[in-house]
Image (cartoon, rainbow, N blue to C red; front, side):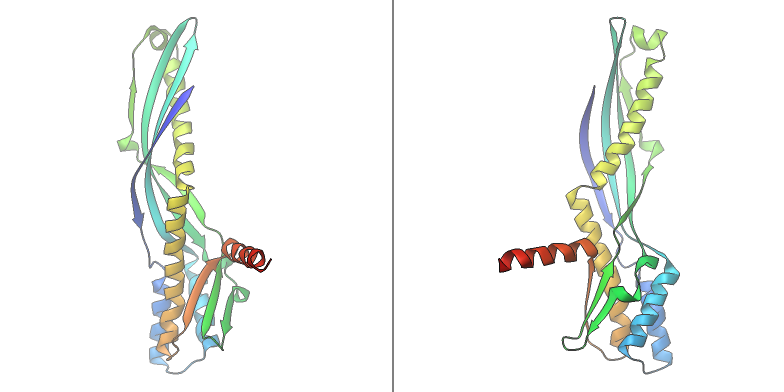
Length: 217
């Protein structure tokens, strides 16, 4: 049996990591005035591909896991507090030219992003705390080691489960959208184009389309 007590300690946004590619394109355009929307977006996309991976968001979580074991009428219980961080990443090489579309009439640049990749958890080994009573079962068997091993596995699984929950996923998506939008918007401003840059995930577009169909019905 095990009890799970979830505690979210802190959520750290690391937005703007994609600005490096945008600044590179911006500097290039300043040196060589001119350029079209197509050439700028192509250069911005190339900069993203060169960067390869974006980490727009990092979150820290804490899993508290309790495991119990019973043998020969004896029982043992161990509790582990495990802090760890999870990185929310985007594979920028998955963004293709077909994912970047320009609407001249509305001056809107739409960018479709690949799904978020959750990397980790990176467990804070120095922050792990373990508690449990020293009973006969732990003294004469390997119950303590087995319980600790179980807690480590369950703790890492719990950290990832927390990372996939609604709030951190929403914050990570928002940070990713902001970073990608700035990457394309800055070079466009450099050539005098005030574009409305909108980055979205593929599943968000699908939800919008479903909502539109439902509303029409």
